Image 1 (cartoon, one colour):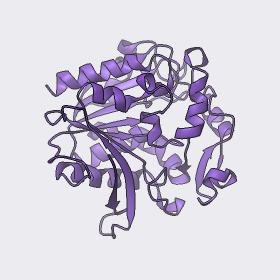
Image 2: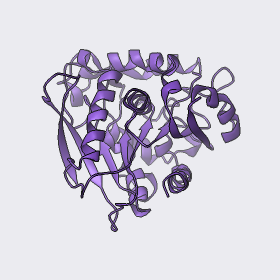
Image 3: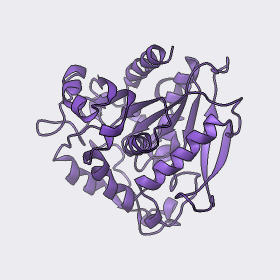
Image 4: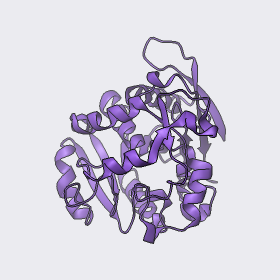
Length: 314
């Protein structure tokens, strides 16, 4: 069910902005299981989690609903159908505070379509969405678990030049011409690049659908805070259960000079020191690039997430 929720961008300020979200529930209601609040990454909107193309394969939302889990899939502030404040006002700290308000709304039953209060909430992030989820969890300690995808604590040095080669001011794209100079998006024709995908594991129709449905914007403030929050010890303040998922060939993070994504065990050895107070599990999706939900074998990591949810929240 589509909904909009009024939010403020900072404590003590008016709730003058709105977040668009879609609450999807399984046939049985899923009342005894946690609600998953889904946060897409930079230059993505909520369609990252619910791609209309071949949804039996590429929709995390549909898969979770089929296994009895509710999802609340949102457009982050500045993206999609949510409000687009001046770009200079949108960064990860703002997004984390917005998510904090949404968690509170879930727990009080204030989201349209939610039957009763959500007693357990799990944040599920990808890339910048994971950075947002990390900061929200470390700051407010109001959620029950974290599924962190597309984020590791060592960057691949070759990934930064590639990122710069595919991003440009959003106002140059007719779809985002109403957003100001602090918003950025991906350059047309680059959506299938190695920054996002591992080509041998990619259905040729997926980058086309990605560009049509899921492509969106990010802000200069979000991009600036991304490495800061990754390396300033934010994850040290996260407690509770964490599932950390990476693509084997995530060119932003993985490589000889970056994160060790050869397998789940090598990733666990690397990442466990970054989550000293959490109960950490890791999984590496074989042959996947950065955008795990868009790869042919994405259902493999969905199954891992379902198994983890069942064990952690029986």
